Structures are given as structure tokens and as C-alpha cells.
Length: 457
Image 1 (cartoon, one colour):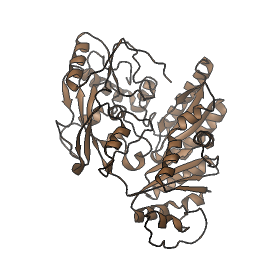
Image 2 (tube, helix red, strand yellow):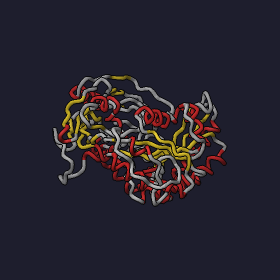
Image 3 (cartoon, one colour):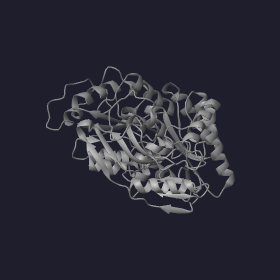
Image 4 (tube, one colour):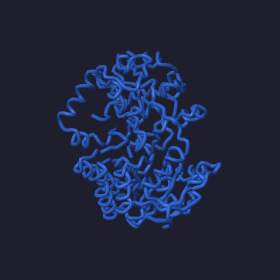
């Protein structure tokens, strides 16, 4: 949504020492510095608004240390989340933060990314243990101390948290120590269609209030479902739909599903004990059952479709992750404009229903998708980049949505960051004292204002 602006030069350092020397050299000559990971961010974070040198960190692509007994790993900025999980494949561990794009893990830390699994495993803010950061002066900082990877600490200021979400405005992240999680023994995914947006989101809130430990709850409205079904060749009902995923043991999954209120075939027959089976999921799914509390059915949910095999689940989630491209295909030649707000769970039905109405009255083409288990959703608008009037309407819609979220005690960005376009909304969100405190922190670390200038503040 932000037009790209090129730097004056691009440099590919091979190690932290080269990054340190480059940064010090640029700073001594008053040259802006723009860190670059994979460039998948959506808020213009790598645009060189004042020219300068882009420090491309993709050649630093090593997994530096793996501590499986401590559930931690140290990665350089060229390591992406898919690369890391491939590296972890035989360890019984995985890194669950999944923003959709195969983003750089250090870039994900810089933007405070999250994604579909955050409802169970948290965002990057909860999964970064330590950072190696090159400061504008060229000094190398280890935010939790060199080599440290403890699970908690009460030692001093939270420097790690300061740099997570700083969007390259305070320093360059050259290594991240990340928290790993045990890979789930069993996984089950499902989709459920609803008669309205209200019904789907009410189910989400009720499932969370019932403390069902689901791993993912994703929402797609009818427009998004139509696009994804066509693009991903799925045979799903075109209606507001929830995508759910459950992780755990067979016994734990059975309990989660019962509390979620989804019969194994969407039929109203009584619960029966499943016989033992060599396949840990087969017994769970072989006999239809109806739990005592039927959250989804109470809200009119229907057309439950199960995906128990890895191939089926992959196809289902690939279609969800490709929603951006599927929605763009609704209007060939167009560009995508993605909004990104997050509200308290209790206010989610209100804002989603109103946003759906606003989208209809705006005259814009768009769809709603969301990580609704966190109260976070996106309205993906499909616009003609050569039509200034339409672009203005899209920007006005995004500003209105951001302010609506703030009015409901939410945030103007759940995961994409502030970047170029949400600086005014940040001021409205945290207030004058909050912004001034951020400015003072930036001035202390970056007195010349050369680190990724024009972003956040």
C-alpha cells in the first residue's frame, strides 16, 4: 500500500562484525540506514524515504545454536520461519509463530509479528528470549546478556522487549534467541460455516470464554470464502466461516472438541466411546458424537468439514494463507490494501459486523479475514493503484477502521506495525506522553535520527 522508494546503495554483510562496521561508517557520515530481511512487511518498513544505505541481512542465514533441552534456538536474520522448522523437523520441536509469509525471523521480531497460531502460542513478543542488536554507533548489544536463554528474568529493564516491534528504528537485529515448543502429538483441523458474521464471531467469543485451548481460530467472510474456494479449489460453502485447529494428544483433542461443541460429522447423535485404533485420530473421528454444550450449533453453525490427515490440513491452511492472492484475483490488475486492527475479544462481534456494513457502503471491493482468537482481523481491499479517488477512499476506510478500534479500547495494528501510514493513529493510541517517551528513547539510541527514518515516529 506504500509505494516503494529505493535506497542509494544496498550492501550484503556476511557477519555481525561487518554490520557493525557498516553501521558505524554510515552514522559517521550522516547516511540513513534501512535494515532489510525478506521485505514481506505491509507498512512500508523498508522504504528508503530519505535515501541512504539498505543493509540487506539475507546472507547471514545460519542457525547458530540449538538447545533442544532448553527449548531454544539462536538464528541469524537470513533464517526464515519455514527454514527453521525444516531444520527442527527431527527434534520434536517447532517454532509456531506463523504470519503467513515465509518471513525472516529477525524481521518478525523487528515488527512484532504474530499470525494464525498466536491464540495458543503467543506472538513474537512472547517468543523472543534474547536479541543481538547492532546499535547506530556500531556497538553490539545482547539485550539479555551474551549467550543467555533463560525463560524469565527480573534483571533490570526489558531491553529485549524494547527492540521487539521497534521496526528497525533503534538498531539492526543480527541474531535472535527464540523459544521453541514441543510439536503436537496430534492435530485436527475443521471448518464450520455460519449464517452470518455475527453468528461466527459470537461462536469465537464463546469458545474462548469456555477456555477451550484451541491452537487457531481464523475467520473468513463470505467474500473471502468464495475467493479462497475458487483459488484453492476447495468445496466449501460460501458463507462466513471459522477455520479451527486443535493440537495435543488424542485424549486432549477429544476433550477440546467436546467443549468446542462440534459433532464429528455435524450430526445430532449421542456421544459414544470410540474403540481403540492404531491411528490415534481414527477412533476420535470414526463415531459421530454430540456434546452436552453445543456452542457452534447453538449459533447456527453447520457444514463441519474435518481435515485429520496432514495433506488435508495443509491444503486447508494453504488456502487460508493464500487468501491475499485469492482476493486479489477478484479484480485482476489491482493492488491489495490490507488493514490491521485488534480489539478486546468482547468487542469483536460489534466491530466486525460494523466493518462489514462499512465495507458495503464504501463501494470498495474487499473481504474480511482475521485471527479472531486474538481479536485481530484484516480487511483486504482490492483497489486500482492508478485511481487516486479510489485510493483516497481506501485510505479513509482504513483510518476510520483504526479509529473505530481505538474507540473500543483496541489498537490500530495487531501485527503489521506502524511503519509509514499509522503514525497519527499511534499518537491517538498511546497519547502525547507515550509518543514523547518513545521519542526520548529513540533520541538516546539514535540521536541523528538515521535508523530507518520516517517510520513509527
